[in-house]
Length: 326
Image (tube, rainbow, N blue to C red):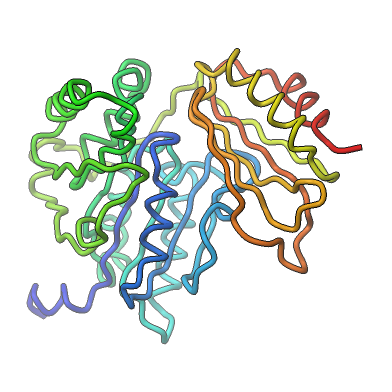
């Protein structure tokens, strides 16, 4: 079989990465809701005890697989191989596969999966690594996180997001920092991850030879180590949440501890409200909105996930439980 015919038979895979809170899920939702007439399988990986991201993804006809039993670049590579292998055996055809990694993932081991497993390599091709970058917080992340730099280093496409939160001079400096790490990636400036799908999918951008030139040990099966200072804590309450109590508590918490809280996200059941409320925050910057009704068979539990440093589990649990309505 020629390389050209082999490529035509292979399903393109896009790895969507970026540090905690950069805007990956927002970009994924844009892709899934755009009227492009394509069918995608979506694989979501989370870092934490409770899965939240699957609920943050909009309701679509796409198939969404969630893996929250570890980092996709560590313990769940076998799961990823099994999921991709299972997809390839189905009669229905996918136009592509999108893998959204946890914000703490080094994308290199994820990319390796599509070269080290013979079955996966024969049926799929790695199309591009797309990295979403938080324009406001990137300089700080490059100081305290090796993952942030690794995500940029392996990117084929960089979505420079949240450009509305910085000045033009700051944007130029952020782009300079990116170019110090990666000279080749295409950079697209965005607000709320608003970028044309044609600039993200079907890029044909991943170049194994270029990666091996820069990282000769790319295909070596090395263990990946996380920054051990970063931990995840998840909480769940059964009673509805009082929105005023929650807003007061979370606002005070983010004001005091925001520098240590890399990412906060949750699905909340508000008292007297039939819609799910999605809450998200990066450091002190918070946002939230209703994302659709609770389904009939849903357990209307509120879940909240914190990812950061110096987290106090009893304190966070007590604070969240105190937000329940009487």
